[in-house]
Image (tube, rainbow, N blue to C red; front, side):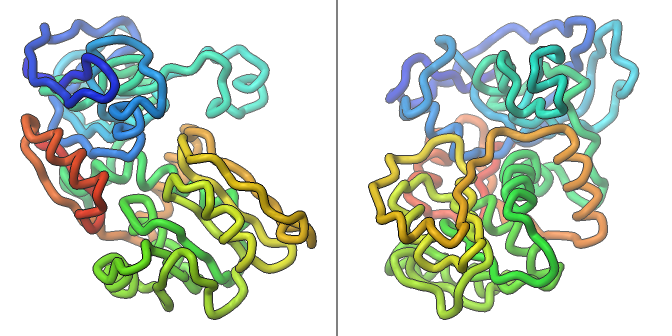
Length: 329
């Protein structure tokens, strides 16, 4: 099978050929139909997240058709369409797993990081951590839901969403463009913060229902109840605190962020809080897919051929895409 592989951090992905893998007892083997490109893939490519093994195949927003089953799989059948997310497995017995915090497992397995992901023609996954996908979304438009959608939703949940809120979204990429639609459909006022001078992203946010869009270094026209930071820029934390009300929360939604600069305690005082999002749980997935069945979203995608994965990465790095890049083998 063809696959895009990472030989070393800082190097472009290389197109190569690998044997089609054989499923273990709990695995499903998927023929990949589409795979979203996530900023986490970019962090791995750039070495901001340490490589876990050489020759890794990235990609953790995988939509595929089941072509083979492990002996212990009962959830899916050959021919089913399945989604593979970032969290590919957990130990099931550490203190975090036992407390139903599997996203904090001490020995997790991540798709496209610990085991090969979806930048390939076939992918293996533990069936217990896969999702059935709603028929309303075709393959390319379903792919971003599996990380951008899920992580955006977990960040939204952790903001303590209650009633009508003034919600800030910092960095208007794949995750923000999905959760913006969810929030607006639930009656929230969304304020989109984009890079100064990025009129394209500001206009995109307004089209998706944001009541305001402006530079990330500017205050919102109203105090925020909560802010979700999707851009990996540590200086946005004090900026978000400055425009968040007393008792509000700032949620850092990425797996990697540049250092947070020091800031006066007064920005935190007033029972404001800062918290991070780590990975996802299977419960997040079930709740999210139930939610978008009631409040459908439109994922905006830019398809790329598999062998153009490096072009997709470059477009993501420069912010040239409204929505999400998706590889189609």
